[in-house]
Amino acid sequence: MSSSKLGFGMMRLPQRSPEATDIDFEQVSQMVDRFLAAGFTYFDTSWTYHNEASETAVKRCLVSRHPRDSFVLASKLPTFAITKEEEAEEIFNQQLERCGVDYFDYYLLHNVNWMRLRLYKCMYRSMICSDHGKISFPLLCLDDSNTPHDVSISLHQGEYFV
Image (cartoon, rainbow, N blue to C red; front, side, top):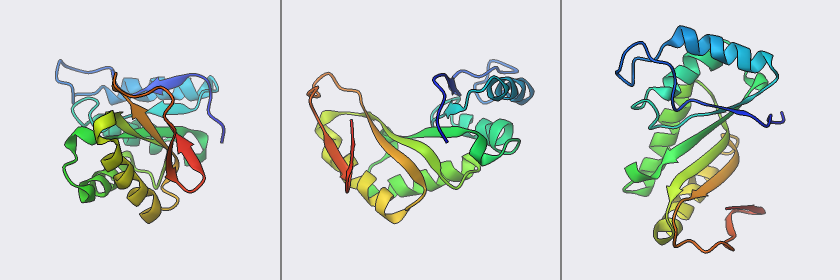
């Protein structure tokens, strides 16, 4: 499936109260339906959005109501929460479960800095190799002013992302 040029970010969803986890699922479901009806397909979420409730909203408002082949889903590994390599795969599997999907179309190592890039690269390679088919397009989101602009990183045989 190809992705549309406009994405639906699940970062700032309507809420029923000031509490970030109190998402207005009815309103979000209506927004998702209108977005898909307009021909758009790309949805972006993250572990951290809405104090870890965004992925639940994805499951409830998108995944449980629409065929998996009708949308493209991206999420991000919260690199700040990882202290050892095994935690990356545990969090990844929790994210799949929270979203109610078997795979992510796009999966980013989010907010990667240059100094820890080698660690993240090893973690990501491990996840890709052990979970074939669960990440269609692995990506890095380099967010560091000290990162050279001409970096090209091989994460997996034949795949290069920056």
